[in-house]
Length: 90
Image (cartoon, rainbow, N blue to C red; front, side, top):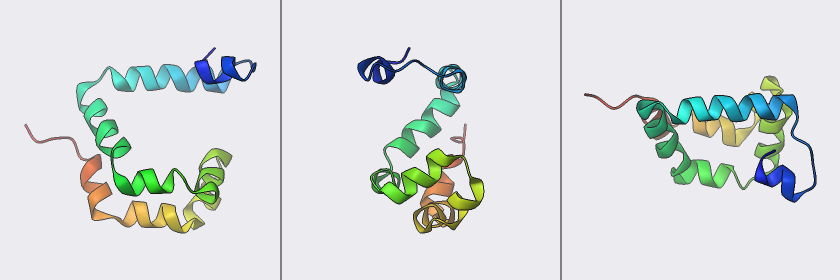
């Protein structure tokens, strides 16, 4: 059970467990970890992550709702974000 769920007295769902396993796999790949770190540290993503409407759309799993969200549109159209998604050149 993740610390957040444990702190709230909640059981971890199978989806949460699978997501945590996938995240661990991604973090173990150095190139993927570097991309994740660039995205996490990006100010535009940090601003979006504090927006309740953006978070609701992202958590809903409804891709149509997320695609309509202005903050998400700004992120996916941002050259800076697109560049962050690229693997570093060797």
